Image (cartoon, rainbow, N blue to C red; front, side, top):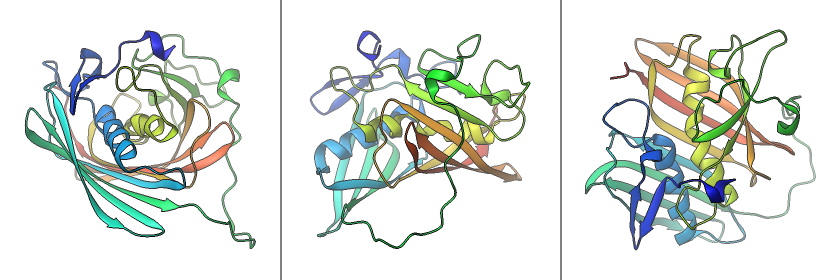
Length: 264
């Protein structure tokens, strides 16, 4: 499916030009969606610094400016290069203006200790191919399979009452002609942490200012499952937290901070 869809970016050298599909939610005149900014950070960092034995264990993106659809460049630097850990910083420029930055920690895989540690069991959700799509798709930028509470009848999980769970899959390439990796795929979708954790039954009133993705292993397959763990907010500041799954089980966590915001 993804090969037939218009990508979010076209690349020429070190410049990434957004297409109209990269447009976000908050401005009718056009703004770059946070999801593609986070995905681009993962894409660039992995291309420049990834190694087969290194697991991208954490990616944090600070989203401090709402850019338009001007051409994008990403600068990077190594903070720490060790035998077991690599730390990378990256900065995203939109039309030459600094708009976001990221920090990525990559850890070298090794032998798992034999002693067991308590962990919450994985969710009991049906696999995505057994979950019906919503009657009307929420967007054509990604695909969702909301996991609804018994008896619930809603168009999408953003309006479902109670703890929310959904499967999400990318349907458009991030960069034209460059396939997703497991890391860039999950990073592109992780901005969904904010709407699924911070959205009310009437809509989304918070714009996220950061997102952090934690992964203890690479996801398997195209579908990523989001399970809201908590939402907290006061005085216009919100926090959201999710557990993440793939078709084989838990893969990590995602969290975000957000500010109260009205759509223009």
